Image 1 (cartoon, helix red, strand yellow):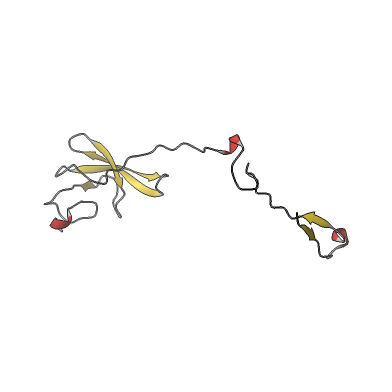
Image 2: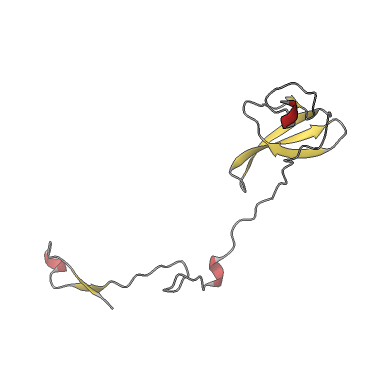
Length: 120
């Protein structure tokens, strides 16, 4: 175990020593492994499934809410489609509530719409 000698800037530290063993804290051992049972877990978050494929073809959807997703550090939108289905997508830039989006091959090129690469 190493000893650390103080430099004597003031009289109270003259001839003083201290152990320089590193204490990690937070319920961990000297190797850094968590051993305390009260240090695990965390706040529960609702995991929202994102529709990356946008399978609803040629059905218009309306943006209902814009939410912050804690699991992705990103904003997501809840979409209500015309057939009654509800899905989350990643929030397109400059999209606001009540905007309409659609995915398909013959849709206009607009922020929020999804087209296959062959149609672009």
